[in-house]
Length: 331
Image (tube, rainbow, N blue to C red):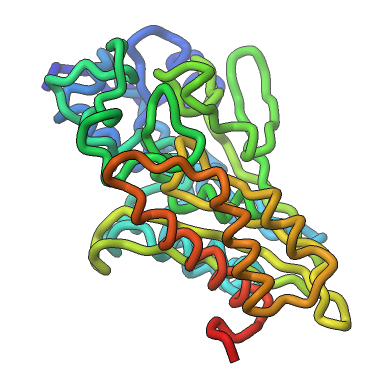
């Protein structure tokens, strides 16, 4: 591991100025960063410690019921917050499913959104893949069991964040601060497909710091669900995850729906076709199954990951039914 310095800026403006400098990297929880350092994927000369910045580690409930979640909020704090559990169940469950209890007490919300891909080619220090400036994605024609079935190409990584699908389902936006000023962007627009730039996973610019995530109050009569499938029920990243929010009227007809999948594409993958199929109808097993088929209609599996398609369909169906309060098996 290359030697590096650690600095602790006194305020957010100072942190932004330092992060705008070449070979400077942000340090928050440090969970993913430590792996990247040990694997020689990154080699910054200076780590900018954000842990001491004031006001970025709180969860605030707004007067209208919306949330402001500081970027330094720990995953465990988000998972166990009583308002989040009561009104944003999918978000609380997504935080609670991440990693292990020890890591959830260390890892931050901002870090979970910004973690790098878990692709074994990208993580291998001796492989110069497309994401590291090489000329090809080794998952194509290689070992691709955990890679993208939607939205892939020319890189076929999958987005690893547990929180992102749930936050996008709730319509969250992210606030960014930089030496040039502050800006806000919808989280759905924050992540970038590799066809734009294979080396990047998001639109964060040099010197920009995530300060908070703003989550609007969910619609009245809405419920949410988050589900994921893993190879082992202890510490593991999901093979597929799904967050769903369904809003019902007094007749139990869906007035609105948002469905977002994780671990199936290079970005959290929203499924408008499935959402449109649900709206205007009473939610039942057959409708949810049709929506699941629509959600995966564009899937293009690689040689070894076709198994993800039926898993994703099952989770989409179950998440819709659970969010709508309907039995998850045909009656």
